[in-house]
Length: 348
Image 1 (cartoon, one colour):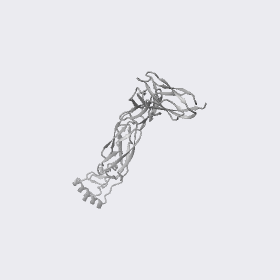
Image 2 (spheres, one colour):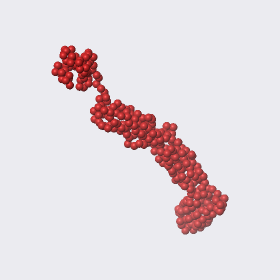
Image 3 (cartoon, one colour):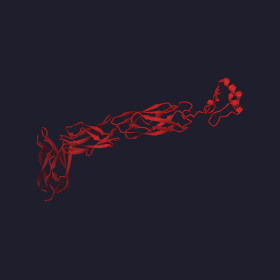
Image 4 (tube, helix red, strand yellow):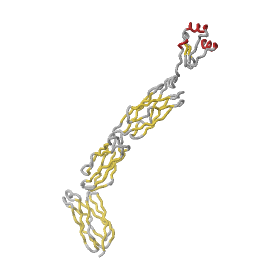
């Protein structure tokens, strides 16, 4: 402190390039020489070598980060540890305390399925800055580490699990089909399929009742794919379950399979008896198959049931017309499957 005071009193100053000289003050030069002390300016921009003033050097101003008084703890975080592929994820870099200078934080992702900006800047006096990370579609769940680093801050890491697309739903164009009929199934993902497409396994729990492909591929960038199912012969009404199973997840849907049958009615005229025919989609089982009949008017008479003999697919029954009628309803039930027919009887 005494040397600084002496310099001030003596009027010693630095030159434009930061150098200073004591040549005009031999007594002060001698004193400094004996002390072997070095004098620096308060802001550190230059220093004086007492023994050799000609070597006095100016120093460049330190960088903003190097002028930070001490290392700052920083964290990088995301609002969730799990992200859906194909979506954006908002991240935050947080300092433990504000800095007097702008802090530039370098972000690094160890996997390109999660892309982050290279630099995130935190203004002087602030403690937080946000950024957006983008998640690319993946075939399977992928854990990604994001590292925040920079001069003057401690390195920190955060883990994000980028999820592969899950099945959102599996549906059918028709809720019920019979033998030989088809329906279109649709698999829908919750997010776009990755490059190369996404294969979804289709598990048919009753292949005897329904023909269904083993899998379907959702094209890259798409969320849906369709497939076709075809009904097979069943003896009774059957609910068939289809499970869509990509990695880690599954969805289930059902389609109703009904026994195939039909009733063939002739033209009906008041006062006449006619013969109608029942046709099954498959031969009647052992002991025969029973078909139940019901009509909603007394102007038509039909039996309450008809037996189709074992091994056969057809049987006939009589229809008695007691009067003219329009749009009477004939209800036919076979092994849980129900059909209705509109019947009209013409006057004589």
